[in-house]
Amino acid sequence: MKKQKNFIFKCSNCGHEEPKWLGRCPECGEWNTLIETASSDSAAGASRGRHAKTPYSYPLSSVDPQESVRISSGIAEFDRVLGGGIMKRATILVGGEPGIGKSTLLLQAAAAVRTQGRVLYISGEESAGQVRMRADRLGIMDRDERGGDRIEICCVSALEDIKIVLEAVRPVVIIVDSAQTLHTDMAGLTPGTVNQMKYCSWEMISWAKEHDAALFLVAHVTKDGAIAGPKTLEHMVDAVLYFEQNDGDCRFLRAAKNRFGSVDEIGIFTMGEKGLSTVEDPSLLFLVSREGELPSGVATAAVLEGSRALLVEIQALTAPAKGAVSRVFSDRVDQARVSRIAAILEKHLNLRLSDQDLYINVAGGIRITEVGVDLAIAAALYSARTDVPLPVKTAIAGELSLAGEVRPLRRLAGRVKAGKSLGFETFIGPASDEANMDLTAVKDIKSAIRTLFAPSSDHA
Ligand code: TYD
Ligand code: MG
Image: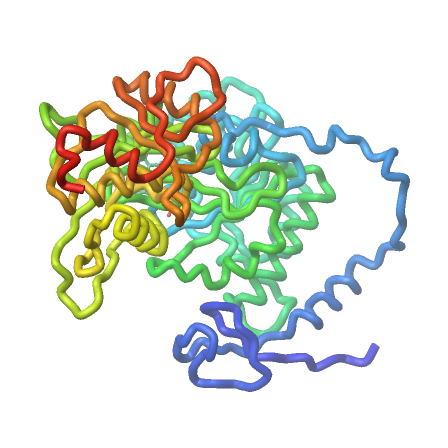
């Protein structure tokens, strides 16, 4: 076969490809990141050549649906984000900043899944000793000695070596920590490039699928959130989970993609002396306990995160704009959402906000994307601007339309129940057909504000 010389220049930061070398990547703007690599076409060609098997098809009805059986990770929050457990043959990318707890999470999961067969932990970053120390700290080694299957460790990162180990161990779960350390003699010239990582990951994925194993690929994400290399793996894997941290020690695991489940679920963990533990009642993290009256600008929202209703404290502050245009400072709720709610308040309640800078925060640092948070943000902004506190023990849920209507919400009864269990006595939300609900229904922003601020409605 004629040897193809198919080289391109690929950015090691974002994966962008250029036919010729440039000092600066036109895509992400990083300097000196373009590296000569074999183009993915030639890499794919190479891999086809090596696994020359006759292609064949078979009746779909002959496929054993048992293949899609799930294994529990032993960690309820992790299973929830995965969509009910680890799917056999699936590849799951676990991304996050260094130090967030990716290795810890996967080692904890390894301890649980080893009852199903061998787990192979491929560590390209840490020595076997370091992984062992972590395992001891997590208290998962003593159980190992009682028999059953085990966690095997291997500290190689060359694909060719890994394959030899895979064939010998035949694991049911493979953990690659991290994908960025994988390399091979195939796929171009320079080790450590995005193309190398992609090629090796693809080979690992194929091995796992062929051998009924589940594969976890760990990927480091840099501080500024540029997921660079790992981003290029997203389309090859079945699920993409990102680990993120708030200002405290609470960590959130979110699915950015999940072929076998919903992407709405989040897992909430705290890191302790013995690894990650799940948080029993997450609402306690997002509420601030206070005696007596609330300060102005504080409202409690009942939102849904996946299948779970959470109560979170929304804090708002309005201050005269420092510039000619007012600005929104909000990193936990989308800024466009805050601007829209401010416009609704301005229009329908004549509340002047356009000369104010608006600050919105969520206690506990959780990012809220659910529509049901609208009304609580409106109430918090109104309270901040008028300096009138909201009534205590009141939880709010509702989506606002541009016309100022409070729109119906999913699973309202679940939110009310969650609020009740945390001691909230009054619940303000949209009218609903759901029975047995102790809720004060409001139809629009005007009636909501009137209900919430009734004794001082002259501020409107
Ligand atoms: P690690 O899992 O190594 O993070 P990653 O693989 O994402 O880089 O976790 C690193 C941090 O967690 C480190 O700062 C130490 C801390 N840690 C604990 O606080 N308790 C523990 O039991 C363990 C294992 C780690
Ligand atoms: Mg690690």
